Image 1 (tube, rainbow, N blue to C red):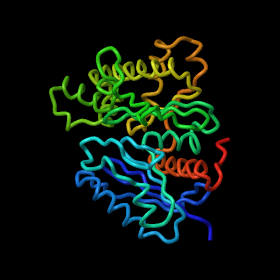
Image 2: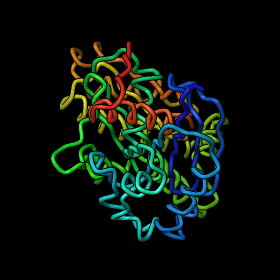
Image 3: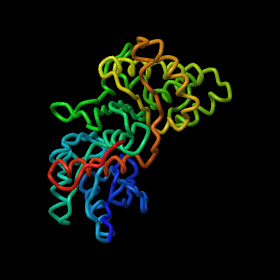
Image 4: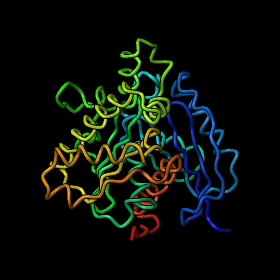
Length: 303
């Protein structure tokens, strides 16, 4: 029987999972509530229950919110959205209880790995990825390797300073929604990114102006990252990028204004291509890589 792997993408709201073949083919998939507000111990119990439901899996591949020490497979920092999550030793817990290998990586890094091994960055030597949502997360890959930094906190780009304040306070979806709601004197809860872009299509003046402001702020942060990393491809992900036909032309127009031609003309800008599958596919790519590094199995080619 061919080996099967359980890949799990633990988000703040929903947990997506899939059974994958040894080649990364999706055999089945599903999703459940994360129950993040119940804290880390509840998430651990839910993941263990999910593993018990499977038959003969060869490994567990985890993508998760929070800062991750990918070598030890544990959570080293988590926001208040998931209480009691810091210190969760995923790798140790799963391997000890189920006697199968487990590898763990941060969710944004997994999104980057997913695109590098299965998506729009396949075959590229260097890639930058941003996920745009409540905040902004980042991932940089060189030859398929994630750059983690000295304390596993590299590419926390949402905190980067650009004119006007923190990058994520100016160029996240939540920032866009808050500005639109404020100018319309309505509650932020009555708006979301999808509604803003629909209003833009219908010619709404405020939404048009704020989307342009959002795209300019986003491209400004992107340009700073381009000057630092000079990537072959820059990938934009997050729910709002489902409307890439509306956003990408505006973002690229502003990016050209902020970048020297030698950088702009030699870089591809794309929307992420894997959608909701990026997390668990990236978790599987990370599993294969880490297991190869630890002396188990072989690393697959990205080309």
